[in-house]
Length: 316
Image (cartoon, rainbow, N blue to C red; front, side, top):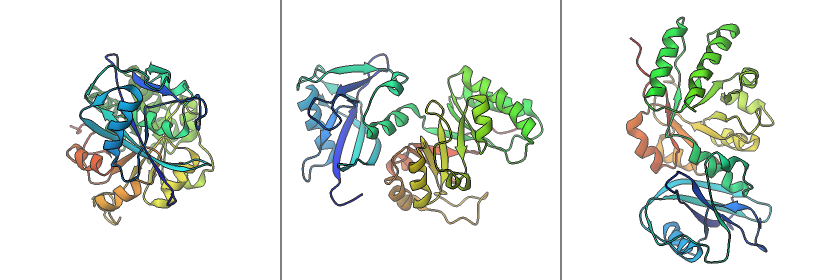
């Protein structure tokens, strides 16, 4: 991002049905006619939350109370570069209406996929749809029944985004297991991403998770938009490449030292936050973390926590 970056804020409002509020950009504006989350530009020296309160009062006639940071999206348009700070609006007072004559609408999270929006708003849609945990499976082992029972327990516990990761299963056995896992996750509306097997993901209609080496070999997104693409990243170069091919989200780490990767230099929260701020998509923190680290991860700009041991049901 250059020194002429424009700071922009947006607020997420939800109605009683879980739909989110969109406003249509007026004629004559950049990207006119597209639908966006309501908000606007920060004035010079204005803190983002203060700008959000001012913009939402001016634009849709409400006074907001508590807010929670959702994501910050750095984005470069041909005409300008922006950072879009996005907040969940927890409480507000006043009746929502278009004070500037702009059209408003409520949309479900599913409908957002097909609504014409500015490119910088697309990562917000991903952040709204992704859960706080990204569960990575351990090596499945010999008993598929035992593994699938563990997966059922993880799903019953509320987990909704699962990476099926195996470095040992033969292709035929992995295909059989992945098909059964897809049935379990699909029945609950959860996402399944298969690690490192793009063709299998194509075949089964699942998402794919790209290990860093495979990520760097690709020159374009490997799956259509309706299937999630995620990537493992460890540094700025890998994050930039992930952005270039259009991933939906990434894991970044290790944040802390782990026994499984004892030789890897941990990033620490400070460096994680610096790298996360450069990513134009949601990022999960990975490495030596558990559910208790969620607050620290959110403070550093993460979507949430990714991991195995902290989220996968214990065997036995």
